Image 1 (cartoon, one colour):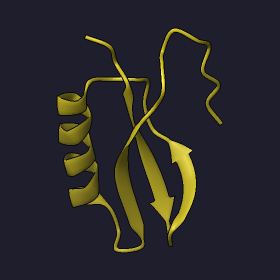
Image 2 (spheres, one colour; image 1 turned 45 degrees about the horizontal axis):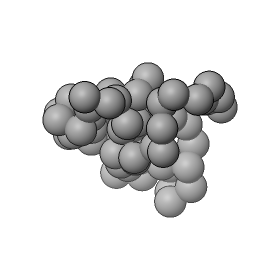
Image 3 (cartoon, helix red, strand yellow; image 1 turned 45 degrees about the vertical axis):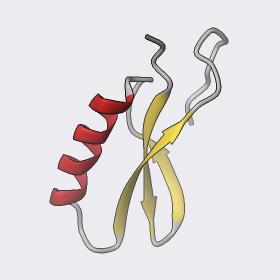
Length: 60
C-alpha cells in the first residue's frame, strides 16, 4: 500500500505547514481528528493527498 496522505495545518484559512511524513489514509484521518480536537478555533487540520511518493518530496 502506498503512503500518499499528509496532514496540513491551516491557520485562518491559510496553509501554514505540513505536519507529518506520508502515511496511509486511515492513519492520517485518526491523527487529524486527534489534532483537531486539541486545536484552537482558528486552527484547522486537513488530510491532503499527494501525487506519488516515488519522487523526492520537499517539505516547507
